[in-house]
Length: 367
Ligand SMILES: [Zn+2]
Ligand SMILES: [Zn+2]
Ligand SMILES: [Zn+2]
Image (cartoon, rainbow, N blue to C red; front, side):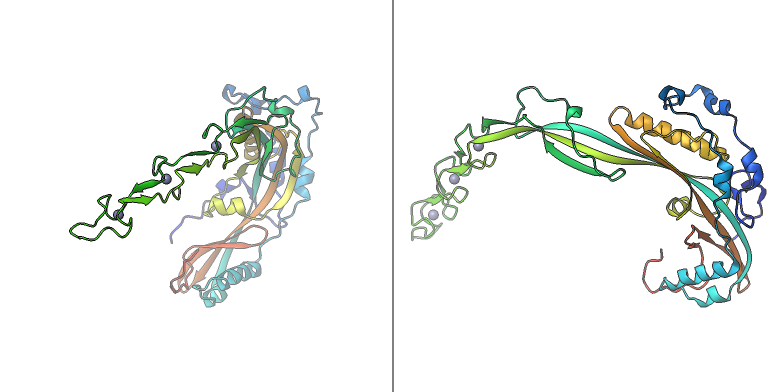
């Protein structure tokens, strides 16, 4: 596979270039975006309340200490080979000798930043159960319920107190039974065998099924002519009440800092990372001074997005934002005259390999 991987300079701008030990380079810490420029952005409305308005002291975070205390281990040649071997051994179609024999030529390690925002919200709807509601319905948000643990999605249904009333069944008009639709109340239908002719076609003997009567007991109502009302189950009355449906939902916004390596984004979104920062509160605020501008902007975007989509239909109960460091290593190797690459991502050293040189097809699906 021909791929131009020589363009190393462009990655410095957007991700932490790996050095040993793997801490972000010092110049990133100095490249703080100015406070003002983040709020200009072409007159776009930002959907979070001003920090001062909510009485939250605006404390500048000391990002350098966060970054200095976070270390992502360096992937050595031995680690790279062991990761590939264990990956290959988990696949029935991959042979392990290539993984053992290939010559590792170069390791390009980067540390990406993953920003996540979770917003846990509650929304309520009411619905009338079993018929039209009567009386004044209570205000939905006045009903107190037990909230599940934060960030755990759930849906629960409650009967609104004092909303129930007993009413005559509207389907059977309080009779508990209604006329059978199969025989229109007669209890008998035309004999299906002789079709009411009392004898079979061209046969002198009378029809055996109806004993020559031409009529047969209705199978729908067993000859009763009526059926038990399915709505009230024969009880003649119905209990009407208002049901409150509460949905607790966790909305997720996720962003991984850009990189120039050819590893699929969905793998990096799921990759195991090293926690760098965690902030949890009823409302969280954009990380405007985070030294990586794209993460700072992502936090503003995420908070604005959740605020805009949830404001009209849900109540926000809790928010959590995190920043994690995701190591990503591009391993260049040589095997039987060809060069290629594979990737090691996450702190648990997951492997992503394209065109592994020793594959057999045994009919299974290669993931
Ligand atoms: Zn009924
Ligand atoms: Zn019937
Ligand atoms: Zn008959």
